[in-house]
Image (tube, rainbow, N blue to C red; front, side, top):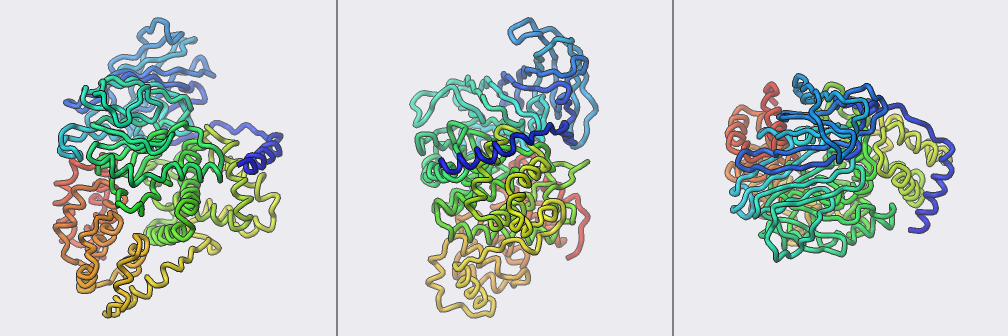
Length: 626
């Protein structure tokens, strides 16, 4: 740790004389004007109204003004504004102020323009959300594990925070926040902030009135809220897990290595700066694997495999505490700065905690996914520094920023050596902590502090090709796993119609070997072959979500009869990573499309609005025969 810190200090001292002021960042996905009036702090006072499926209350914004004549421009989506007030001081008298809500843009929502007195420094907006808010999912008791109480959670990334808070919804604007949240008395509220209460193996009933504070400045997409029947367990002195009571013990066992993960990351890349790290396991409708909300990662229950085989997701969300939360992308076209770095750090965590063999297997599987997805992407969507002008930033959430970004960083590591690259990353995280930066800022830092002093290494890594060009550079790293050699041999035997003699040994494989085994089979694999495989290994009954998903995807391609299991999966799991490929495969044939439409009509009410919109977009595309 001392060596990393010392080297980071050397780098930062060397580059301190080269400071430059970057011009204001233009975020095409925000109406806001932070270059004139910037929101610095948010105070929320919200009531959760489950009967109407709305949040109701106020947001008080503290302002930093560089142009005393300019109005305050905020982002909103489907908010009902009842009144707006302003004040010279936070404790002073708030007076009504003039405002206009602009026309609705299908992607960006509506601009809220607030006219300010010359010395006004605080604004209070009284509002309520819409039942159709794109960030909020209100679950009936039947949609939860306990089946007794309702549940609410938010998903603010990328630009959905504006559908439950009026603010400058751009990652370039970082804010501190405090919140008071009132709930039904039998429910607990949690946020991506420090809670002013401690509940672990709680004996006292919920109060129905909760307060939170986030002292570090974070982007708006990291503000998060969940309300439900929740219990908690400690994992370590600064780590814990929250979940519904029937899930919490299983989750605590699955995530028991979390403290080890933090220690491994600190050793490599510098201290954990967020005080605590807790994981909240949400109901299965959560549309993503995880969301890196600071202090409180939101996670899907689909990673609770019982054998820790899918906890790379925990490593990923934890890694965001350095790459993404500590140093954030300034715009959504810089998204790879969040995710590429995070996948790279995730693999380093896995190697340190579970061994390099596992890290290599997961990296190999991920490259397979990247290559498969990129084969169907247009060239413009294969670029790390993607142009999202006029598009929904959710369109950029492909494997490209994640896995291509991680490959780029791995290429840099291999060029300069792991030890030197670790020092560089530690310096990077320290230099830009609690800042949102652009790709240009990173490239300048990379050139000055790593490549300029290593010209021979720099020649091995075509930086411009990696960042601005489609495809994967020919020099990109490949991951060769010895553990996959026997897997491929077994797959070839099964493809030829003969079960290998080592079938008994196959039963000892881990999740990653089984996934590789299934992916080795071509898209033309027949239903008869799948039936033989299922009789031997019972894939259709797997409790591992990744294996079951891969099996269902192969079955749909082969027109293999799995209707009951497919419908069960698509109506009980809301994770977009699983939903999109299955629906996309189904709609390739008329019969499959009809089946998909029927399932979606049943499942839609249980999907988060983000996932439901993604699936609806699949049906909106013109049908093409394969």
